[in-house]
Image (cartoon, rainbow, N blue to C red):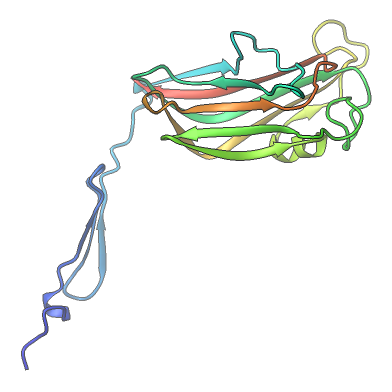
Length: 204
């Protein structure tokens, strides 16, 4: 009996990623073989940058967003592409920063701050943060509390400083209007300080 067109002896299947050239094929022994060309980027070809999220040039996020929401963004310029690796925040507030408060604002926020990421033309909601517990769970590896007896920066005011690390860098394409955004939807005007910084890079 002749082999059917799809029998083992006649299999020749190729799966190719057109953007990278990576390929997979089933050989005569019915084994999947993969050939990959990863083309690693040399560190000398990468420029890193830290940039504060801003609204109309202002980086101070301790604003009243309860009536009209206030967006703090980073958006690459048209024609440029960046990759987001980490997002950090700092909150300074002289008061009781319990787990159920936001900073020292009594109680959890009504709406919460919303973290949005638009990547390759599609917007995603990363998380909503309403209290200090949410902050600790989202921005891990942070420190907080204050430094009694110190003067100037990080004095006896309570503070929280944390960082969110993404498992893989997130592509932000200026041609598609991509952005990283924190949307303030409550009154945060009583916080002493609230800022967010994005650690990004691009290929040069």
